[in-house]
Image (cartoon, rainbow, N blue to C red; front, side, top):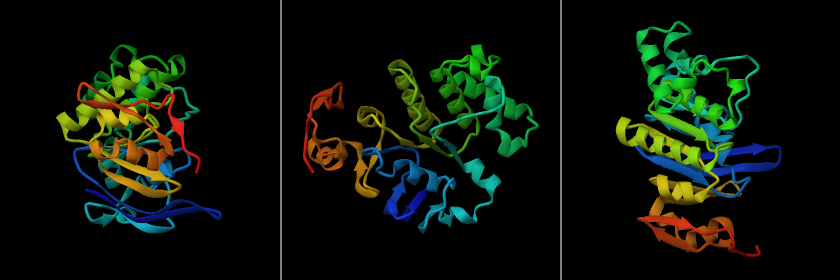
Length: 258
């Protein structure tokens, strides 16, 4: 289990994450939601050790993530950042193979190749594995980065707005694949999402942040209701039930004055 305990992060005088405590339940999709600037990406970066917290701690299996050796940590937790810029020319397969680095240190064996093949297949990239990343659309490139994270074969997969650059069709595909990783392979997925409807339809739990503070944390059905959403977004958001899913109709909602 990942436990986030009293995490705080300041940039200059601004407190971006303010004393947040959350438990990430294993074998679930947990979505971090909230307005822009709520601290979602910063929180995820501290969980994944990309950023140091000013105060508080993150525990993985009851041990502070600071005490984990890097290569052991990389076999348990993978992270996909929001912007992934590469200044080297790689094929899709070469990129996905990077996911095996914690195990192979660059010398892939048969097992590594198997994980690479599996990840390419999972993301529907087998046919384009020899294409260069700069020849792909933004959505295809994003799928390649997600395949790299899947090839890393970690228990915990942290994704910072992985639906950026994706059209509706590919966004749905990605969320279905993440759901499969949890339901079929027992992974634990933590994801920063902008679209609350993707959070509503695909996640088990929702953690809502606002101005750096934790405002809601619970099973999805408890958070996706008009009262809770008003608290998070300062908007009246009507909710429609469709095929057992709660859909938030926020396109013409009334905004509350703060």
